[in-house]
Length: 287
Image (tube, rainbow, N blue to C red):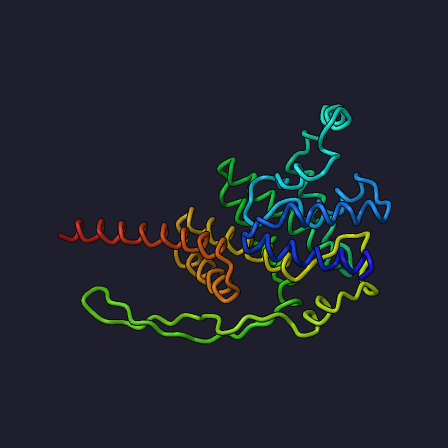
């Protein structure tokens, strides 16, 4: 297997493990990736840039921008050289407007590329997290929706699914009602994408650029779905929140992704508790 084919295999393996929350093999995977980069004479600044752009420096739903396993594995993060470089000034004065301008510039190019959609999606996603922290929920929702829209484009290129109309009985107000919802019955990778991934064909890939595996695309799509659903829950849009959260949970269950199953279930649990509390309050007022 060539170094490029091995890198392609490691990219997909690391992305899949990170999405599933399996961290026990990350140290070994990072060591192999670093050795392959060194074998290809890729400088540390370059391979760090490649991993940063593709968001492979951390795992799914992690607030830390860099995985501890990478810091412990790479010799470049230790010693006097790193200590010296670590004290260089960084662009900490980047404003919200700077991020907006960069993101909209990426998606304004015609025709748009998967790379530009991917990077812009991350910029909008990160911008949304910053706005949430500042309490600007309605503005955050607009950027969360934009990130979700871009990531949905990429998701639909990599995966296919079947939607079925479902009915469930609800009891309320002294009468039985039927609630109609839409659920996923099947989520699977596009056959052409699966063949491309597991054939380790590097001829169609620029291995010195940002490689987007289907697992990374799925991870980003689920993170955006969770983000939009959570903001809807925070601002009191219960119906919209439930729609996004159930959709994300259905995909997570179909792909056996415990991290995401717990995340979506947790917010759905909060939503259910709020509804029960509201229902009790209404009952008290009525009596």
